[in-house]
Amino acid sequence: MYLVELRPGKEELYRSGDELAAAIRSGDVDQHSRIYHRATSKWISVTLHPAYKAIVSEHRPAAPLPPLERQTWTFFNDPTDELAGAHDPEPPADDKGDSDKPWHRPLALSITGGLLILGLQLAASGPRPPWSAREANAENLPQMRPASVSTPLPSKATVSLASNWTAREVAAALPPEDAPIAETPHPAPAPALPAAPKLKAPALLRAAQPKSMAPVASPARGVESLVQRWSSAHNAALVRLESGMRVARLNQLFGLGRLNPGGGVTETRMSLAGLANFVRVYRQQQSAIEREYQDSFTVASKAQAWTPAAVRVWYTKPALEEAPEASALTSSVIAGIDSLFGVLDAQAGTYTVTKNTIRFEDPSATRAYAALRARITAALDSAKAAGAGDQAGPMSYLLQAIGSTRLPLAI
Image 1 (cartoon, rainbow, N blue to C red):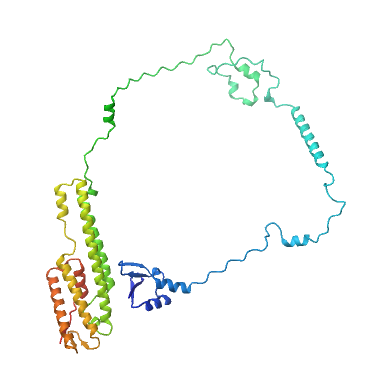
Image 2 (cartoon, helix red, strand yellow):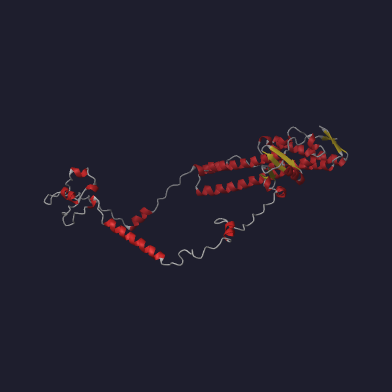
């Protein structure tokens, strides 16, 4: 059987691989659908199923042929031009260009070089710009003052462009040589720092070593946080069990539609097998959670030196694991119901069932059915008396699946 989620909120159960393949070919099951994987108790994409891959590969179009390689390249010229040029007449013998006159090129280079030199000479002999100060000589310039001179320049120097100044104007703007030079005051010396105290090597080592600090209790690592994570793990396992119960579709377990030999018995037995698998996985997860968190508590309590009050919080937490008595009752009820439906499956076509009674043609089948009915009824009454219906777990979900239906009496 294959449980497929066609779209969110719509699920369909296919009894065989042929039905699933037909649904895939018809388009009811597409790449957005999900199929339930019983081994891992998870929903996975239907595209991972081998049947879906095989059907999709049948309808996949063949890959196109690669393009043919080019025989000619036309990036730089057209092959038709080459063919046309093959029939062009040869140039006349008397028009061979400069191949017969090798002295033309050196002559042209010589003439070009001469003209370039003549142009440079004409440019050098022309008038110079006014800012070049061609008439001033280096000997006529006075001795320049050092940069520390504080005498300001005349006011016209501040409004004239530097490019219009000549050497004579610069000399006139400078102060005379006998003018006193203002000395720049020297900055006051910085005060001397006191000498650092001398420390011995042992004192330096003691100062460099980090001081041990008292451990600070962190709420994130405390016992309350550990209990909270442990409770969240149990709740997640319970949610997965509830999802598996919905997948099994065991509502109205003892209704006439399920006891009818026309196909309801076989489907109900398969759903019971799925339910038993979900319960087994849930118990394995509970055992793993208890073991791992107990180890984490042991390590953390020693590493963080938890107080006796913190340790007491861990050991007084409420029990979320399924009780041994409830576990035994649940397993007994599931096995008994499966055996009872096995009797009905073996006697298919030889019994009649009504709302309150069932009649077998075989007396041995009547006795086997009556014994199984009595055992199942007693186990269910014990579970209800123990309050299993009010506690979240496999037994409470099983009681919800049975609902108000009752097994008919054998007559």
